[in-house]
Length: 221
Image 1 (cartoon, one colour):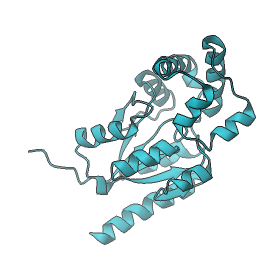
Image 2 (cartoon, helix red, strand yellow):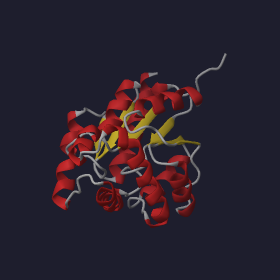
Image 3 (cartoon, rainbow, N blue to C red):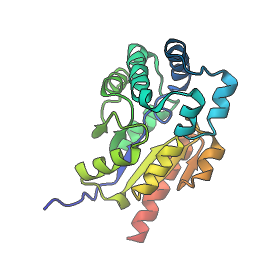
Image 4 (cartoon, rainbow, N blue to C red):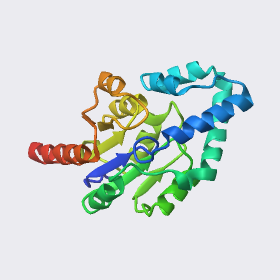
């Protein structure tokens, strides 16, 4: 019988958490809107959309539900052509290197394996212990559950880091503690409403939150 690992584990989201893809995906979505005839967005729209869930964002674009998987697939393909221009958020690579010495690191993302592999290799960040790609837009909790099972993770020793409403909801459904970062796709107000365990606004705060979670975990055992 397989047993759960007791290793302290950090699972990261990709877009908006590790990779600053917001502006690039803004341009890609507007290109696709022109080609496939759904709503384009302005910079003002983009700021308003930061307060909405992923489902509400799709309603704004007025993309028929049956076309959504194809549109997202096309978006990932276009991103792959320019993925080496995508930057990490400032100071995150240094933090990841420091965290690697003490934690098992993983990635769970809706983005494609091709994009992730190219990004990690180009930015010399290909040291994650496990990577799960192509999670469905509204299936993050299932992707997390599969990862927990496959990697034999103990949820009490695992911390998730994400930037969206759906990340927080998925973490809660999987009984995972979550740190929400404010530099990604959803606004601070939208994140606060979902009650993450931590809400941080800088890489330094992220490190402090990680330390706080695992120190308190040790004290309680």
